[in-house]
Image (cartoon, rainbow, N blue to C red):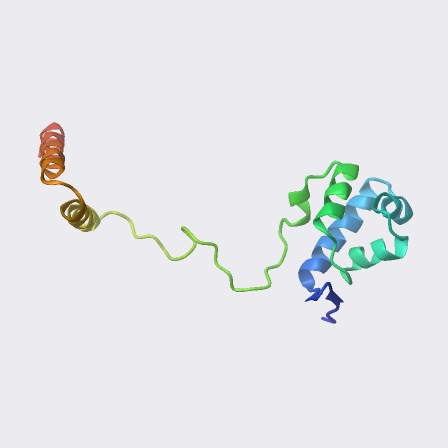
Length: 140
């Protein structure tokens, strides 16, 4: 794809995608490029560059357009192609193992180590008492 520069950043397929969604919603709302461009304080030619993905639209302009058309801002990004290998932190980092087949024993070892290293003697006794009470309640 032919890439262009905008404020020091190259535009890419994501800009094209957002631009297509803008054009689609503008037409659905029966708005002309001129009318939308006037609300942005720019020329229709500049809006056309946004719609083609040649230039990247600002968040402010996208917010104005979102309000004009009654379409939530997230609509313009849903299904957008990714352009990197970024993995969101949390559950997406790696597959989480189920706590079965001895997984709870491993968890107990980790918790026990943490308690031993970080709790006072009195607090450790309280935890042990609580575990014994739990064990008797669940039939251990």
